[in-house]
Length: 264
Ligand code: ADP
Image (cartoon, rainbow, N blue to C red; front, side):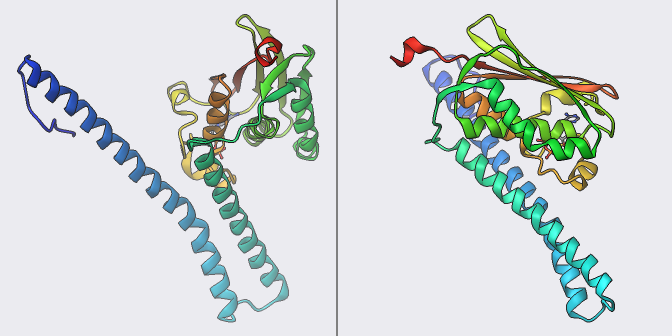
C-alpha cells in the first residue's frame, strides 16, 4: 500500500534520481512501520500481565478474598505475572543494547564445550523434573572467539526452548563439530513438538511465536531467539533452523574459531 512519492517513467538523470529517492522514501516508510508494530507488540505484551496484577490486587484490596489460602493463591499469581514483566523488560533492554551502535562484546578465546557444559549444569533440575534425557557429544576441544556471558546466553535461550517445547520424557541432543571454513558448529536437537515448515523463516523475528496464545501462557517472552540471532551475528557467526512437526527441532550455530595469528 506504499505509493511512490515521485511518479516517473523517465530514464534521464532526473528520472533516475527520482527513483533513487522513491527507494529511500520506501525504506524509511517501512522502518517506520516496523517501529510502530514493535511498539504495539511491546505494549500488548506488557498490558496482559499488568492487567492481571491490577485485577488480583484489586480483588484483595476490596476484601473479596476471604481465606488465607485464597490470598496466597492470588499473591502467587501476582508474583508470576510480575516475573513475566521482569523477563520481558530484561529481554527488551538486552535487545536494545545488542542492536545499539556500541555493543560491548568482550571477545576472548572460549572453550566452546565448556560454555555448553556450564550452562547445561544449571538446567539439571529442570531436565530432571521433565525427565528429559540429554545426549551430549561435545568432544572436539575447539576454541571459538566469543564473549563468555553472551555465549552462555545463547546456549541458555536455546536450551530453554528445547526443554520448554519438548514433552516429558523427551530427548535433547547436543553436538559440536568443526566445519570447513575455520569455524565450529553447535547443534541442539530436541524431540519436541516441532515447528511448521512455513514458519521456519520467521524464527528470530521479535515477538514471533508459532502459537501466540499458548506459548505466551508457557511463559516465554517471544524475544529469546531474536536475542540469540543478534548475538550470533555480532560474533560473525550464522544460525539455521530445521524442524519437523511432531518430531522435533534442530538449531545450528556456527562461530568463527579463535585465530592466534590475528591476535598476536
Ligand atoms: P519464546 O519466549 O516464545 O520461546 P523464542 O524467541 O525463544 O520465544 O521462540 C519463538 C517461538 O519459536 C516460540 O514461541 C515457539 O513457538 C518457537 N520455538 C522456538 N524453539 C522451539 C523448539 N525447540 N521447538 C518448538 N518450537 C520452538
